[in-house]
Amino acid sequence: MPNNIKQLLDESIPADITLSEENKQRILRKANQQLQSTIHPKKRLFRPIFSTLAIISLLIILIGPSLSNWFSTRSSFNLPLEKVTIPNGDYSSFIHSIFIKDTNELIYADKKTIYSYSLSSHSREVLIESSENIDIYTLAANKNWLIWGEKNNNIYILNRETTLQKEQKKTVLGDIQLQEDMLIYNDASGYKQLNLITMEETNLHDFTGIGRNSKAGLYDNLLVIPEQFKSNNGNTTEFYVYDLTTLKQIGKYGAPYKAAENVILMNNKIYAAFSNEDENSPILGYIDLTDGTFHKIETPPFNNYAVYKNYLALSIVDKNTDTVKLYRLENENLEELPTFNKIKERLVMPRFTDDGALIVNGESADFSMYIQDVE
Image (tube, helix red, strand yellow):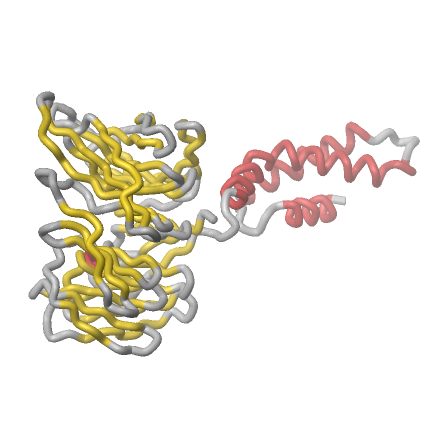
């Protein structure tokens, strides 16, 4: 019987839950004690039934917490957390890398070269070799296009299907985003849209404010552009919303904050880290596009954030450092998820792709990245 109990114990525990030998022996002893106390000598016919029930009940009690944690870490998402380590790379390149879920690859620039790293084959491919250093702040990519800037402020366009390369002599000031076959970027005067197939350019928005603290937010066919303005009560931030299908402005919204950083458009809401000069740390909030109301989300102190649907990643401040934690956002309340709990290194730069993949960078010696698909 002890061998049968031990076999049942081993078969009942998921492969990646490890029990020490001491705990196994403790469970076996209790199972035997429970077995002896529940079986009447005259009812040997029912001994196998009572034995099995007693053992299963005891196993549920003793390993229940471990099983609960095991299921909770796996039931949240369809795909597990993936660790990606690219050999011989530079940390400053990885923190600006772009993940493309359609092709399961990471695009990143290192000095004068742009690479594609396949997560499927664990191989690296050179996409572009330039005579000048690549500007990692003007780098954008999807499965069809690769856009990058160089120190001369010109932007270059590569059709990844035809490998045809084009040059646009435009002074780009740092915000460059791709939406299928459209390029959205800003220069000194405002925002433009460039059709990458026809190379036809359309003016979207002319700047009228005194500055900006964030890039524009782009989601589906909507673009939101933040601008600062001076008022009698101090600086405020205005948000201009454009429909990229009609190329028309469809809304304008205001917030009584001087700074709105890391603007993200998601689910008909404009998210940002809002702050004024007299505040030590930003608050996370959003403007609902349906009625223009402002909502504050109660969070721990944070340095950076990313949001996708009802998932929120925060760089939580902890003493003299910070690290990324993932939350489920329900009715402006946060439920912490255990996604990164077992990772000991500091995590930075949370960012979601527009189809729901969260990327964070680790600061261990190998500069690994972690990808969690929340869809």
